Image (cartoon, rainbow, N blue to C red):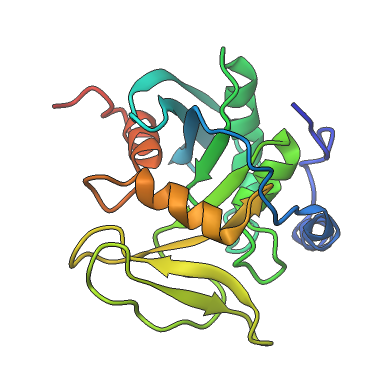
Amino acid sequence: MKKSLDGRWAVSPSEGIAIQRELSHEVIRRWSGGGINLVAGADVHFPSKSRALAAVTILTYPDLELIEYKSLESDCRFPYIPGLLSFREIPALIDVFDSLDRIPDLVLCDGQGIAHPRALGLASHLGIELDIPTVGCAKSPLFGAFREPGTERGARSPIKDKSGKTIGTVLRTRNGTKPIYVSIGHLIDLRTAVRYVLSCTPRFRIPEPLRTAHRLASGNLHDT
């Protein structure tokens, strides 16, 4: 798997912003049309300010059966700064992806893709690092204007930047629940991203790969 920064993670916030602006031009916003057999979820928890616990789960698609999972705890040296979370979380996630036996066809990330002030949220940054299609599936908005979609499952509305360009979708994944915020990560288009996110969300608000990754990171994967 590709790693574009080659270990350049120990950067200042201003350097991180410059890197995001540079890497945003590398985001590929189109889908190859390839088949999806394995979908991963990626999530990071922080047991303390200086430790990161990264978790990745891999599920079959479209059956969504969990077939592989792994979590690793490591040092975390970058501070919590909204808009720069990739520098805090991706080093830990890369260690987990490197340890997996399987390479997923698609990764759903708990964070933003291009719906980001510099068009390079965690999902986009991770996709470039791994050279794998990624989608940002955030539980709350970060950037852009939108209207609330309808209350039924599948209802959606566009997220737009200041120029009026669509950068994401507010998606209702379950009747009467809060929506999630979907945006292109890398190597995918928005329509395809929304389709896969919705098909990976058969019962709950959060897509199943991300839900299992969250449970793994919090130590609750095997709770009934």
